[in-house]
Image (tube, rainbow, N blue to C red; front, side, top):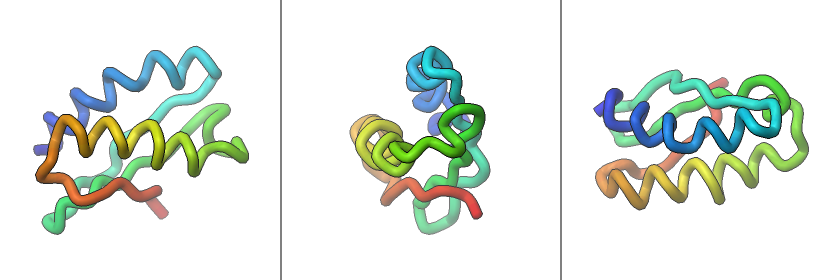
Amino acid sequence: MKDRVQAVLDKIRPSLQADGGDVELVEVTDQGIVKVRLTGACKGCPMSQMTLKNGIERLILKELPEIKGVEPAS
């Protein structure tokens, strides 16, 4: 499952990198929660929560319906 999630993140990555940011996959839990860490310019961006939910989570849930959600890694 981790490889499949990483493949979806690789589709999103160029858009994030164009703005000076990136996303790192931290974990896929047994409950179907993907934990990611936004890095670079995304790390401190006030829009990072919107990027996480409306961008990253939306695409992952569309391509991998077995995933329940995406959360920031602590």
